[in-house]
Image 1 (tube, rainbow, N blue to C red):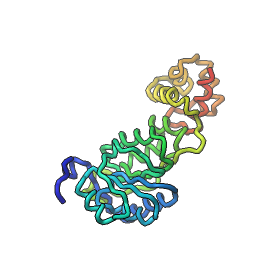
Image 2 (cartoon, rainbow, N blue to C red):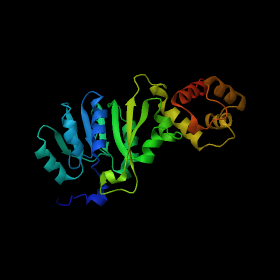
Image 3 (cartoon, rainbow, N blue to C red):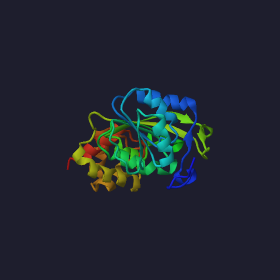
Length: 254
């Protein structure tokens, strides 16, 4: 395979998925969704071939022009394009892909701020997938997105299931857009700032953290925590999406 103008596999961060059970699981998860499909980082087309069997509109993109040209010849019924996943619009109902590990965060941030897609199935680093799904405690990015999206951990992929083999395992992360957001869209910027302040602020217990983050009195913060049902002894990483939404509604009421 000729070297891409963008670099070799190492420079592109390409770890091709060869683990057949995971390829089947990815196809099954996408098969449970509906609508057009956009595959990010199609590589040699191991997943693309399975997705094509679903019989739905499919666009597959990759930054390696040589692999794109070869896959385009092999799958004439699929739209295969040379494109950068960090810039290409997420213009399908379903987004799926084996994400280059070093690009996971920027791609996730773009995805969660994009408005058209309904479902995403992503193969990322195991720790990223686990944290985004809230296993072992939530993260700031997940808390900021949780009122609009649901996250679930769908499996672990051994490092030896990739070629070349990365230093860490992979994880399957499924994301679904909520039909009814838990927080109004008009509040999103203010809510994001509130969550950031909650995760970066200090305080002994949840009421103190809320008081600092929302810039409200301690008595009012205690009432907000009590009314939300979040529990005074919990920390921001322990809160569920419903807790975040209820807490926001309490502090945003003025």
